Length: 132
Image (cartoon, rainbow, N blue to C red; front, side, top):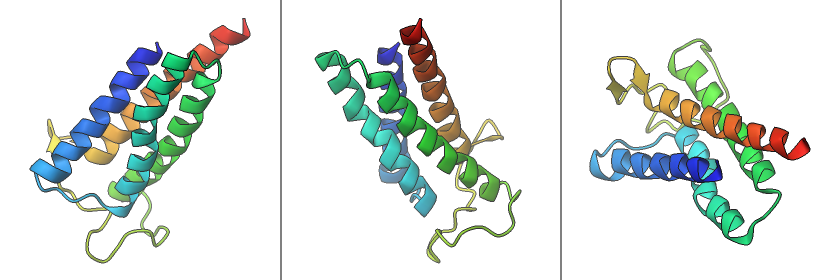
């Protein structure tokens, strides 16, 4: 299942780079924080697979949990559930900026949250299987 986690993180990284570098949609501050955790998994997961690291599920669970918390916060700001938040966004680009909406409802922060939740779920399932 770690191959699936790696595929999701790699797809997320490539997609975010396409959004910013090809479609010229600049990432906001919260997007950058989420990228830190997602991009890390692109390198940590295959390294753990190659080295047969028994703690790999822990690493991906922690990274996806923290990235997911940031994504939840970003979605709360993006969809204006939280009116005032921490001052993490720059004046150049607001974390509320509506740059892209796939199918009329799927925003960049929502896509990030979905990826983190899937990776976390798979990692926790792997941890549960290790305990048995």
